[in-house]
Amino acid sequence: MTSAAGTLLPGFEGTELPEWLRARLAAGLAGVCLFATNISSPEQLRGLTDAIRAANPSAVIAIDEEGGDVTRLFQAVGSPYPGAAILGRIDDLVYTRQIAERVGRQLCAVGVTLDFAPDADINSSDDNPVIGTRSFGADPALVARHTAAWVEGLQSTGVASSAKHFPGHGDTASDSHLSLPVIDLPLATLRARELVPFQAAIAAGTATIMTSHILLPQLDRVPATFSPRILGELLREELGFTGVIVSDALDMQGASGSTGIPDAAVRALAAGCDLLCIGTANTDAQLGEIEAAVATAVSDGRLPPSRLADALARVAALGAAGAAVASPVEPVESEHVESEHVESEHVETEPSYSLDRTIAAFHIDASAPTPLKARTIVQLETVANIAVGPAPWGAAAAGAPVLRVLDGDAIPETGRQLVLIGRDNHRQGWTRATIDAARARDPRTLVVDMGWPSADRRYADVATFGASRHAGQALLRWLEEESS
Picture 1 (cartoon, helix red, strand yellow):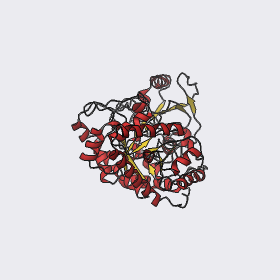
Picture 2: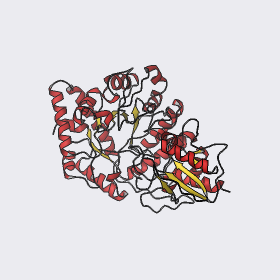
Picture 3: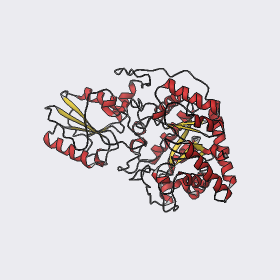
Picture 4: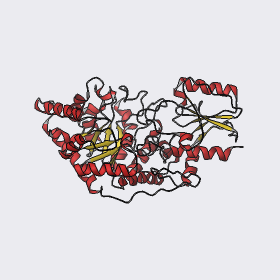
């Protein structure tokens, strides 16, 4: 095994540590990235991270836990927290720090040392298919101050943060999981908008920053993850970041769709990435191919040995810092919302006051129909983006009986008020048509958008700016309180 192993962060299938991965960890693999498919319970997860650490005490153990729509700990039941967009609308930095700290304590309890959060993107496009409510908002100053608060709250627990996706994925209309987004903006615009939250994250001491697989043609001809101009000159030299630069997953189409993962790994290291996220279901053979490609690149001069040595040293320091705080801690005890009693052992719910704060963050159109007690809740089931995945969401996640409607389904006549709930309602032709037809049939129809609504709010009588289980609980409470 080559020394490049100390820069690699693969994923794997299953809830137990595979023997091939155990052997690679013992031989110096940097660590592991965990996903929902690796988790069945807090106890199982703690056992898994203990096994990882037994193989390599300094292993980086990473996860995507943003505290809202994107969750891995709670993917089976939906997140109990308000996500970034709700926190941005509440705009209470103490509260944002508290939520991040609670997430951090849960991650500590299960042995995770690196959280790929917060999302520091400014959601400047209502049509963004992959950021949306993961962002604190569309205002650079607001996003910056909440990014810093989230970093501070999370890292107060000893878990390292990762502000993402540098230099900003908010002004895109495509998903880098599936294609290569292009942001054709000059550096002056980036400095005034996209870079502001990353500057705040750096000032707050974020341990890592994650790159984005986006093309910025006015800065470079290659995606940010592979750009020495963006990672070296801009992030390291201009912004002064000295921590670990983490690549977004290299199995994404925006990174390796045309070259394959081994070549993408070489290019990412050469550009300035230190820790390489490989993907979700990697294999022993795949890691061998990556290490061989890196070794060849060092020998033929594509990758300077000094650059590889620098990456290895930065990742080793991150791993050592995580090892220092990864000793067993008391498990997080469940707390129950005043009106909600969630039985899952997975779940720590929020203080009851936070439901009211979330409700206050809703956008409610002045002409919105009044909720009625005789109502049928309909969830318009669009496909969630890959980052969010198949987690329960909305009113259904909060335990309400709902009628699930897919593209092509007709909504039956119930004689009751329809409450139509969707995510990013304006972005799908079939959801717009379904809403238009329901409104034409019954003007009492109430439309809720639990994603990021369009600026005109045409398809959002109520906008919750989040679809987590917590947001669903808040919506149900609002419906009950407002119904006549």
